[in-house]
Amino acid sequence: MTQNKGHKKRGSVLVVSLMATTVMLIIALPLITKVSVQLRGTEKSFKSMKALYLAEAGIERAIWEINYGDISGWDGDSDERTMTISPFLTSGGNDAGTVEITVINPSGEVRIIEAKGIVPFVGDLNLNKTVRVALDQSKESFFNYGIFGNSGIEIHGNAYTDSFNSDEDPYNPSDPGSKGKIGTNSTNASAIRLLNNVVVNGNVYSGPSSDPETVVSIENNAEVNGSLSVLEEAKQLPSVILPEGLPDYWDWKYPVEESDVTITESGKYKNFKIPSDKILRFSGGTVEDPLVIHVVYEMILDLNSQIIIEENSAVEFILEGNLKIDDYARFINLNLNPKALCILGADSFEDLEFVSNFQFYGTLYTPHACITLSSNADFFGSVVADYVNISSNSGIHFDEYLKDWDRHSILLDTFGVAAWQEKRSQ
Image (cartoon, rainbow, N blue to C red):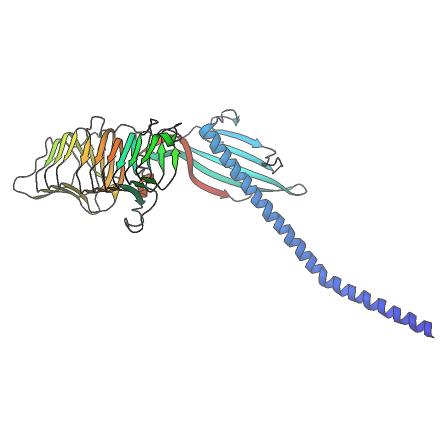
């Protein structure tokens, strides 16, 4: 009897254990299934991202080959070139997957690149991601520096550079930007001289293949709150193109009985003079389609005269000869937008000095002349010349909005991304 009771107890325990195990399995199986699905989903997400990164790497490879290599050896023809990288190796030498690259219209002004990243997933199943980009020819604005002097720059006596962005906010002297960069194409020793408490709030660039420590001379407590760097390529400074088809008004003479005159049309003039104490206003034009004033010989602002650019207007002065600015004469740009006032000096343009205590919102491009900003000048925009001389206590406030200005830019030999799109998987 005692043995039978023991057997019955052991049998009951076994039944209870089996029932408990069954219950646990019933509870655990969905959890295990859920975890398995989540792990598979995580793996799929990881490999999808891996495929996307491979596609982007293919895009970068194609852009590099277009700009600095040669894709003429790829499969295809003048309409389309293709290349497959399989395996695509990581820096550690591991197989990351396959990349298929297609360049459409490989010699055109607008080029299309498609790159597909392919990563094995389960069995014969792959995960694919395709990226498509449009490239167009890169441009460089004339005005991508606060100061650029082809052969050199000298800044002295407590002068300084900083930056702002007129497309976002006006210049704030209590919170200026730190991108007031300056540069030169020169590789000569001391081509850039910073003297006597000058502060450059931005990078300083010397000519290609130069030693910036030699090209940039920093003396007597001057500071560069940025890096000393070297241009990869010389900045191109093309000659100013003279406009054609403008109405020819010969010499412009201020009406004798008037003291405040407004010009609303573009024109070509042999000489252009504003007498003392007179005001000349310009009304009309936009920053991309400004009024154009072409002066062949000499433009003069006599003592205490003013040129005023009205609000919502823009003017471009193209000067072949001399620009003379007498004491207390002023350019007044009511837009406070440097794009609204542009002075371009042709190859024959002579050196220019802005008088002391001068404020100027605008851009200067005189690639064959020397520009001098006398003491206490406040210049908002960008100065580009053969040589730039900045006197004491002057501030050069680079407008970062100018660095992408298409109107005054040149086409480079390289191509950049104009549009990017991830294509849907088929």
